[in-house]
Amino acid sequence: MNPPAWRFPIIYAAMVVTTATLHICSFPPGQVSIKDGTVSGGEFTHVTMVRFRKSLTTRLSAGAEPARLEQSMVDRERSVLVVNSLHLIDCLRQWEYQKRGIFEDPFPWDPTREG
Image 1 (cartoon, helix red, strand yellow):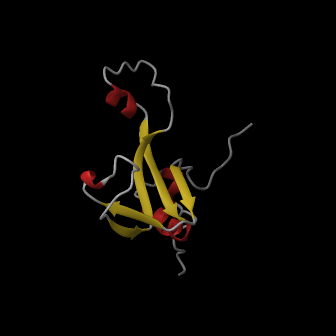
Image 2 (tube, one colour; image 1 turned 90 degrees about the vertical axis):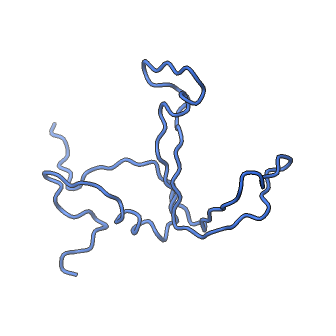
């Protein structure tokens, strides 16, 4: 059995697409209440996407022997992207990737050559 003849490359990414309005909050760490976790005096900014780093597994890589907790947390860390659904296509267009070989054709989200 032959493998499928894909027209486009398959790109795997940890992504959450949401209809929620996304905001980031800038504040000095001292403004977080230890009692209830609330923030006083933060400045909120509307954004279309948020990227953060997270380990998505509790298992270490084969052969990993971290000496400290911080080392174990970054062992399998990867980027996670949270994108507002109205901005998904723009997000995909902004990705930097290199097309090679059979994948010279435009991706589905690329503008058509006619227009």
